[in-house]
Structures are given as C-alpha cells and as structure tokens.
Length: 134
View 1 (cartoon, rainbow, N blue to C red):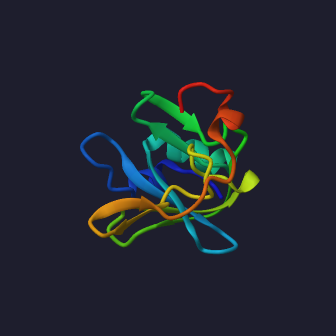
View 2: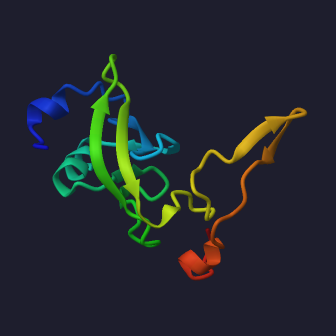
C-alpha cells in the first residue's frame, strides 16, 4: 500500500478533521472496535502497516498497542461509498482489542432496558496496563 496526498484528499473528513475507523478481524470478520483517525493517523496507518488512531481524550496520535502490546497489524483498508468511514482489516495481536481486557469493544448488549455485559474479560486490564487507571 502506498499513501499519497490524493488518497488522503479523497476522504470526507468531518468538521474536526476526523473520520471514524472500524477495526475488523481479518480472519473472522468480527468487529473489534471503532476509533477516530485524522489525516496523519491514516497516513501513519498506511505507511507503518499497523493501526494508528487519533485519540480525542489524549489529543494526540495513538498507536494501537503502544502500552498494551495489543497491536493491530493492517491487512487491508477500505473507504466507504460516501468516503466518510474507514474499514481496517487487521490482525489483532494478543487477541485483545479493548482496554477492558476483552476481545472487542462491543461487549455490552441491550436487554430488559439495560446494557448488560455479554462477554467476559479475557485478561484483567490491571495486568495489561500495570494497575493504573484504565
């Protein structure tokens, strides 16, 4: 994959210069997470062949797995028909995509009017992040 200014210009960035990016497991098709990318994050993702996002809470680029080791290796990248959403096909190293220690971030299921945890923690986040605030 080659990153060009033309390819970056094709993206329909929102007013904050961001685009939602969905990470999907390349082997199973399971949706792992949704994050945001700015122009530089997309450029780095293509160049480095690993998922790099824009962290709105940190106000900086975030290389997935930089703290946890749970890197997302890029297999394919797609842009939707309106050019306003990115789909990353990735290999999720370590099998954990969520900072809660789960395989993916979509573990809450609506049932009886409440959101309920539908999937167990794979690894305690304190073991992943050293007991800090996760």
